[in-house]
Image (cartoon, rainbow, N blue to C red):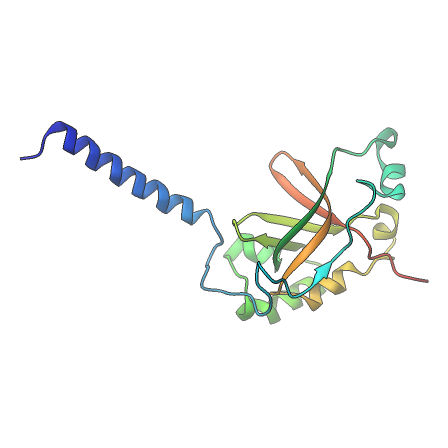
Length: 173
């Protein structure tokens, strides 16, 4: 017969095990789907350059009263994913590369999936050139779909939404 103490410890260990299981569940969805190229220790490519200023001149000019929301310059490593397919059906990795390329070519949002399971929306930072179609970050993301890459830019977080605005993709005229 077990004591109340042993029962309490057993329930606590069981709860801790469940808790760890849930913590693992918060990591990358479908971890069996692996990236085609690159690792978190050795990314396949670098996209973007660390900006000197948090926001570009065009973003500051486009902001309400010239004051964009706070941002933080970052470099993050993760897998380029189709944001929509990952959130909707958990797809990523080499097996999803062809589908993800089609989706990005047709305007679906670009995501970066980090090793801790966080998903970031990726966009060009330069406001007016992005709006006017003068940037080519989308093509760089398409070329690196399902690859683990390092991305540099400005992180903006609002109400639990995370986006990295990538710099360095204004097309040369």
